[in-house]
Image 1 (cartoon, each protein chain N blue to C red):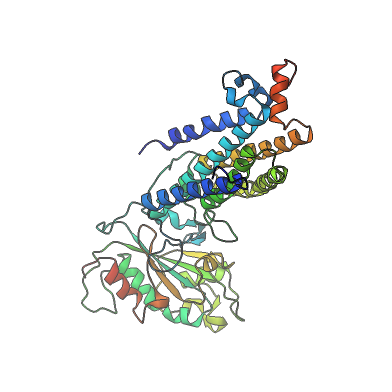
Image 2 (cartoon, rainbow over the protein chains, first blue to last red; image 1 turned 45 degrees about the vertical axis):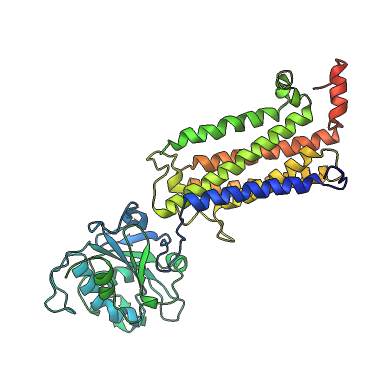
Length: 233
Length: 206
């Protein structure tokens, strides 16, 4: 090496920088265990925010407010979150409203019974907060509005849902006692990479996706909550 | 866990010293530190130190991002200075093109800048030295756009990530250093030997 007159300091510098980079990456690998952000199961759910209608008016919603960052699986108190991506003009969403109502009433502990599970004991697991994210799919006859979202939730007004074929107040189930986020601009839908509606995501209290309907193999929302959220019905 | 702001101070002090070495006022250290007798040596030492701090702060930022993704709270406060709120915001904590964490991007950028600065420090009279200083200046100038984007995120969130701000400061100081190196080359002040001899004769610039 002493006689190598062609040696270039750039090689020396590059090796030093690469070594420094390697040490930094090793340090990060040893001391942290990062969780990727995404909507696959076991990934950290992306942001979910916007203006929400909760029955009394529009106010801001941020999923972060629902997150218990130091949650552990032994914690049976911190609330879970069920995100319902829907469109007021989507026929499937319109037909699912009765089931969504039954599930939300039972798992939010407003009701001690669940019509789909006769004889079931009152839900003793953690509260599962439901939240609807109402979007407007890029399909003809799917034009929606805040008034329509409000009518869909409250079963009120004269707005038409289900591609304009049915009155919003004629949908199945009672008034949904959970907030609906205005996602007409599809911001949340795109962030969560939702390809169609309805799609449901069960989110753990720490913000990790525990289950999603798109790869549920027929398992219903209620079955998934009963299996994962730790209740003893 | 050690208060993150104390750790941050450990970055700010050497960064401030690095910035000081880049200024003409640094000539006063030449007498106490003979290895920094010339303006060029002080400039390159300051530049290397600044970029090294930028690299380390970027590693720390990525570490905080990873910890937050695990669910930990590292530097969460109710004040405007809360890096947890900034680095934990999944909407803004990755670059909008590749989805890479800003900390990792900072590591890559400062690593490359360190390569330029380190190479030139060792071979200041090489034919490629001027080109490397120009690359460094272009890269740090491009970093200003990224800083503007990140500051706009912080304004939107109404929170400031102090570690990110330190990395931004390292980029700005680095830009100044690369610009000053170019100026010295243009002004014929780049020759270490000449400066030393001039200094010995009592009439030279230090």
